Image (tube, rainbow, N blue to C red):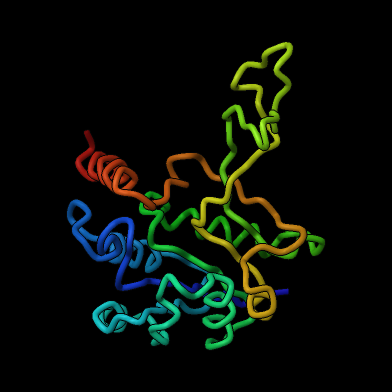
Length: 222
């Protein structure tokens, strides 16, 4: 059965840890405009909606041919739990399935989203969502105890397995479930594995600088 997938792109006008990170210069573009460029080349989304409280962001989206959702400004503040943001935005739009796409993964290009769409459509019904993740090859502890290794005999780092982290590049699930759960994560997710570079997310200034350096190298070919 064909699944209608709507790409929903949340873009706040303000950010706390990296000031104005979505709109500030990122080499020859911005995180926001770069992601719009990626999405323009994606085949498989029935439509792409930009959700923001910021009029400049919405105007840019409209000028480039995207649909928009004018978000209530309170849902772009740090005082509103993210679960309420998920439910609110999903309830405001139409569509059978939502692909939640962040602009803060600048090294994820169009082919990544097309592959996610393909895997979601072929996904076994036992799974209730698709989550983009990357494998963690670090020695992890929780409450003082090792999580993904036994300390004796000491394992090689390349042999560590069984742990992954969400990258937030793309998460896909039924819209009604996002409204109900207030989340992109269900009880039985399908893990869509990506490499560490593609998964890089801009959360702090050092992330911004590192991603910008890699992006510049890709553009300049050096």
